[in-house]
Image (cartoon, rainbow, N blue to C red; front, top):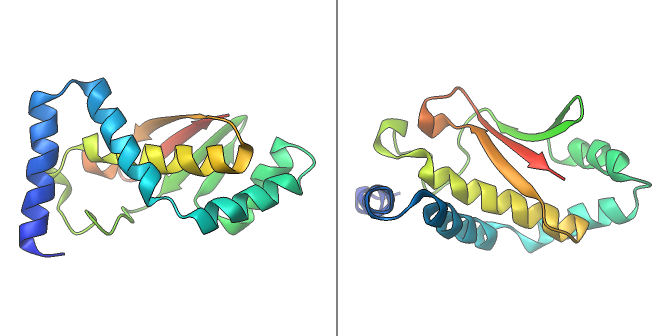
Length: 141
């Protein structure tokens, strides 16, 4: 990524943080994340879901394909040990707020809505951009 694009993204997110309420910022970035989600990946997840007997079987089978999907007790998470977003993963975390991570929330919402045929909620519990050691998104099915 060019330094120019890095500055553009960091200033965009800083501007949203300064001038836009938290709920609207989240909605804007979620919409971006939905557009980033691959239709072929959604199709793969939907096929696994359609061949599964129940949601638990789907999560187990999909977790074998998508290594970032984890079950902890009755909870379902997407956990990343590092930032995989090619738009921002070269930007030092101190230069970009966790507002940007709402994009990943939208990505996850699009994935599960496409697979399950219904909306899900996604809660960002941890973010590398906030200084956490990992990104952790709880999926509320």
